[in-house]
Amino acid sequence: MSRATFFEVEVLDAKTRKQICFLDKVEPYSTIADIKSLVHKSYPQWYPARQALKLDPKAKALRDEEVLQSLPVGTTATMYFRDLGPQLGWTMVFLAEYMGPLFTYLMFYFRLPFIYPHRYAFTSSPLTVTTLACACHTGHYMKRLVETIFVHRFSHGTMPLRTIVRNCVYYWGFSAWLAYYINHPLYTPPYYGDLQINSACALFVLCEVGNFSIHLTLNSLKGEGTKVRNFPTPTRNPFTWLFFFVSCPNYTYEVGAWLGFSIMTQCLPVALYTLLSFIQMSVWARGKHRAYTREFKAYPGLRMAIVPLVL
Image 1 (tube, rainbow, N blue to C red):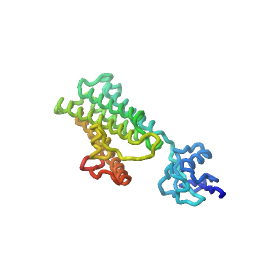
Image 2 (tube, rainbow, N blue to C red):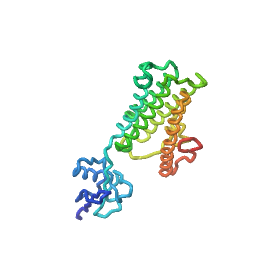
Image 3 (spheres, rainbow, N blue to C red):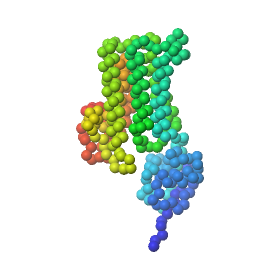
Image 4 (tube, helix red, strand yellow):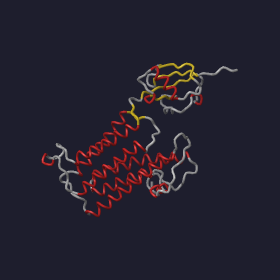
């Protein structure tokens, strides 16, 4: 009976090249996640989600599911450690990002003191469009919070705290900027009146329902306990038929909702926010589209990333 072969893993600091720890008799079937747990035992401040392990200081971090014996290393492996800094789980990340805009907008809608001149404190705009805009904005972020808690499945465990702060500044800051102008005492209603407001509001609501439908479809795509991956396809729900034309209709609907909000409020800051959101979501959608086409040979060739037949 042959003796089992164990690995030795030397963990070095990626910057200084100094040895952090030496792991003896590591099982060949150990994953990177297992190795991170061993490092965590020696250094409790570096919990696994905070660690990045690489085979080369300039290479990409190894995935947690990768197995030690399948890596291009000998029985004595050298790995380079990088501290990713404090981390926060994705659920908490999105709760922080979305709760901020929800309450920030309401502060301006109810005109809390020191936002507008004192005589307007604790008043609200008499215009119907501002109330409708508040309902749409509040509903949008309430939907996002519900999706975060009950719908989304997150493929990555955490996000660096510094990134969370940056994202919160973006979402909270833009929400305050939009709300300031829409709820301002000098705000004027859209040029074409009720026709513009109602048609744009209808577009907003339809896109919000579409976005939610896509998220439900993506949630059911991968069942619990299975590792089989499939690309999303349309269902009986008409809102999912956009999958015939784009890879990421959730982003298409998201942009459509903000476009409707821009038209409904006729507010330049909202239009700017919509444009920036479209640019960012186009980047995400194109990356997802490329991943689909690489992974699935039978992926539909008609599909674009975010805009049907265009982008």
